[in-house]
Amino acid sequence: MVLLHENSFLGDVAVTDATGSPLNSSAMPVAQNPLGKIPVLERDDGPAIYDSRVICRYLDEQAGGRLYPAAPRLWETLTLEATADGILDAAILMLYETRLRPEEKRFADWVEGQWAKIARALDALESRWISHLNGPLDMGQIAIACALSYLDFRHDVRGWRNAHPELAAWHADFAARDSMKATEPVG
Ligand SMILES: N[C@@H](CCC(=O)N[C@@H](CS)C(=O)NCC(=O)O)C(=O)O
Image 1 (tube, rainbow, N blue to C red):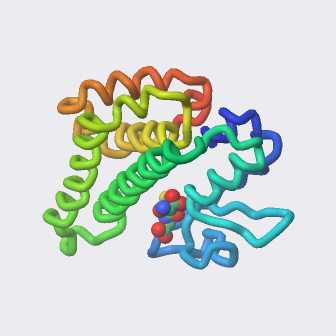
Image 2: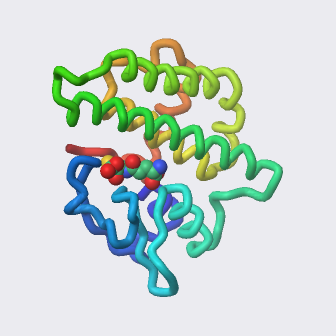
Image 3: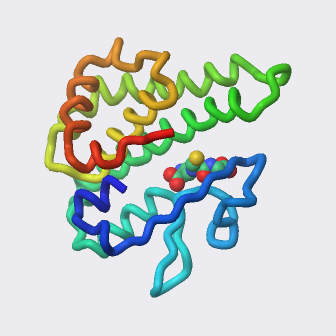
């Protein structure tokens, strides 16, 4: 959604809601994505495509392609996107553990193992990636900003900003963009 705002491409994509989980995929677009996950993008010119990274790259190309730079910077952009995706996957698994798993079956060490992945990723962003994050706008920055906003949304109690002041300052600036303000998570 942030990419659509940044590329002024909102009017070219119809957005529909879907909710579900590994315990209930009945409302998910499983015919379009056998993994039963959102987002999925249905296209007029080919089969449905899925996974945020695939969809974002496709939509950026359709919109004129300004959020994926040429190599060699591209490899950094894609690595940042993958880092954001990994943070989000771990954050969602933590949420499922407390929301979906019966209390007597919950495994605290496993949850901490997921948080440890996120914490290492945050450390890497703070120590190695600030200069890229401050460069020309790209999809890596958007993905990381969304992942950090998701941590605020679902795992605020972990206080990710405490040990990551430069990342926190970068995120504060980025979150003030119209595209981010228009797409803040609710619910
Ligand atoms: N790496 C995937 C992750 C997608 C994902 O986990 N989506 C969640 C959103 S809540 C979902 O659909 N979960 C349902 C499930 O895992 O069954 C992407 O970025 O598209």
